[in-house]
Amino acid sequence: MSSTNPLPETGFLRVQQIIGDPTANPPIPPIVPVARSTWFKWCKNGTAPAQVKIGPRASAWRVSDIRSFIASGVLEAR
Image (tube, rainbow, N blue to C red; front, side, top):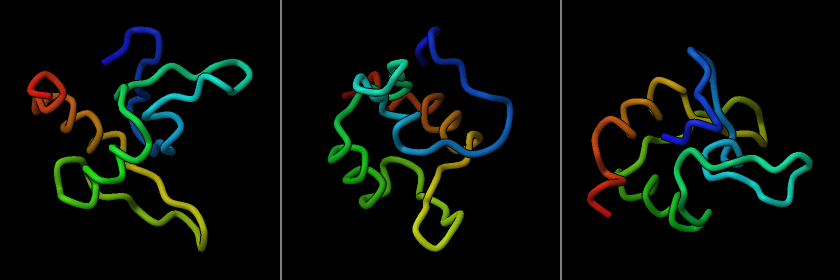
């Protein structure tokens, strides 16, 4: 987990908050430093947590699921 982008205690994160967005103003540092396509591939095959629909055209991930994903050590194995 990046020390410059601490996770909130509860709530949801959008994909840009998870994988980062260097083009945002100000830039968003990644929590999980992978490409967008890799993140969605991991979600599809079950390596990363599944997304939750928060609206008709919006999805997010639970902070608790991201914490568990990071704690599982998957990132160190890659």
